[in-house]
Image 1 (cartoon, chains in turn purple, blue):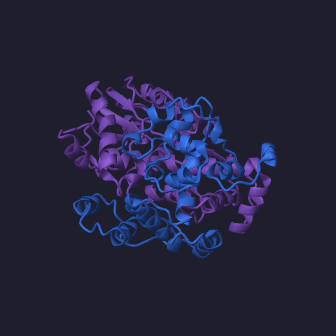
Image 2 (tube, rainbow over the protein chains, first blue to last red; image 1 turned 60 degrees about the vertical axis):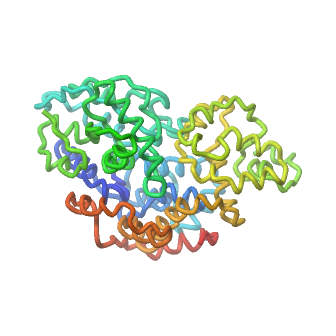
Image 3 (spheres, each protein chain N blue to C red; image 1 turned 90 degrees about the vertical axis):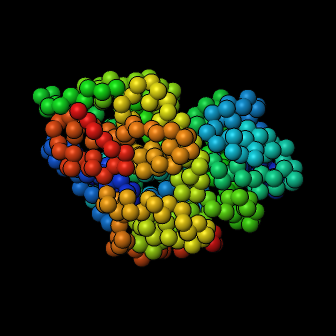
Length: 281
Length: 189
């Protein structure tokens, strides 16, 4: 079984902390992660908003490259990329005519043989079964696991966890000693791609999530999406200004939380790169 | 799409939706769950269920209203509406279709200017390098939207945390990506 990785543009730039923690975990558990060779951007929200063909062709090139690399599956840590890649694979699988059309655009063969897994599926498959004896600093804190939109919806296509009140991240966190809280904002949108063009909306929506998690006693918000992270963490000043409050709750990638629990240094898992200070005792 | 055979050619949005993306606007019975769950319904000129209602009327005036609405650009594609729709109507795909048609027919709501500027800057960035260059995206967006001072305070904090690259990564398959853009181009500029 060859597992590849499609990091996507965020992990290469503003979410390099996420990238560092994914690779640190892979190293700690002896997992090979080869990058899809010469990968391109998946097109994200911009492509599917403006141009349907483009929104299929860009992910199709990535998937075709993964196939060419002989990867049986690829892990896609960015929830937005995971969503676009899975949507493309599903559309092309069910419509051979469309597949030929898109193959023609990318000028590459595409069969749809590489599986696509998100970061939690990867953790469940390769890390949690090997956690025993590895935990040196149990993550003994109340946490609010925040799934956002694109990890769990559209459910019929992704077929992952449940679209309302999902549990997979909560389960992983409880295995490293955390106490996941119940709160109703697990899958509410953070404002996503409007971060720059309508920062006010992002401040409002992300603030609601933070306010609720904090008021229920959560000590950290756990995420598995670079876009959610940047809205909840990098936009914290805007959020605090919008709400007239001083929210302090840190936002931690699930891979960082596990990395910390198994004793990796803050630097190794990118914890020093956050805008909101993270102090885990 | 077996039912499309029985469609009579009409130049209405509902007809095009059925023909192109297999969504039947008439299935909506206006329960309003989509609007109740939509995180941006309060900002919209027409809530998602109202957009569905406008489409159902199939009148030229209401089709025009839909294509000129701000709603279609505010939609975040969070997929909550589809998730909760008792008729499983794929509203996010409807929104994608409407955005592209609105753009093509030059009926974009003036309030959506910045949102579209952002999308265009995003695509422009990957067209030339294959991967998103965040700094390039931001500068191009500022140029398009004339929001020069916005987020200036973020930059030094991003730099000190190693989160901002100054040089774009250019992939080997850049010509291939450029070709993909050319082949799929619908003159969105």
